[in-house]
Length: 123
Image 1 (tube, rainbow, N blue to C red):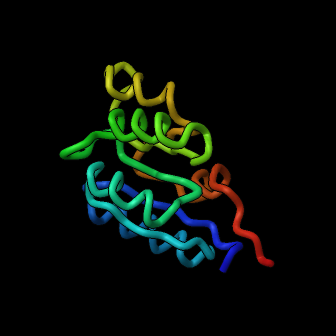
Image 2 (cartoon, rainbow, N blue to C red; image 1 turned 180 degrees about the vertical axis):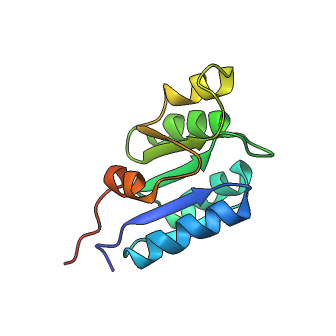
Image 3 (cartoon, rainbow, N blue to C red; image 1 turned 30 degrees about the horizontal axis):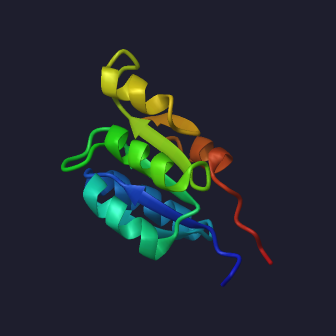
């Protein structure tokens, strides 16, 4: 399984995380879910995701804090995709968006998400 693409989905909205994770699993991604930023942070070392898809507004460690930590620890080695229903004028959203590779609006359009994810290799 050296060719699997691992995606960590971090969102406290369980229904959003479940739908996204299910769709990505069907697409061939290896997916794990974290219900908040602290748990996402704890899962990164063990799961070694290629991509972290996370909500800006989460308990314990929000998306801004999580993306800051991920960039400090991993640089550009992990693709970061933020998702939010909030406005760009919100300071946390604006601060997060400058740190990520991509950002998506909720509700998440799965086709758009698929275009920005690292591709699944069929080898």
